[in-house]
Figure: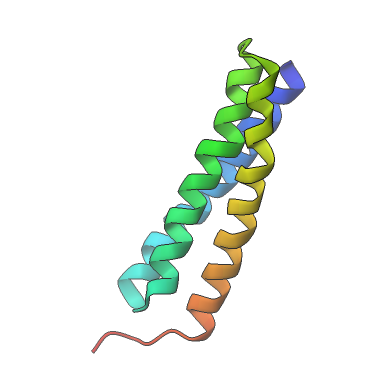
Length: 92
């Protein structure tokens, strides 16, 4: 279970840094894609890392079914961020 916990921490940390970058991008770029990216990354952290944390702490194994959905949220978040940056409008 230590490896499961470590995986949750690693993905949580990297995507927390990504959320900071999304927040900074939101100050300089306009568009719904940037906001969507932030919410998708938050959902990914909650579902992916949260389910792994819970499993490592002894939650029922059925909770592990949420982990792939969190992974999908991470992927969609990164795609939304890329689209938001490519099609961004600067405020003004």
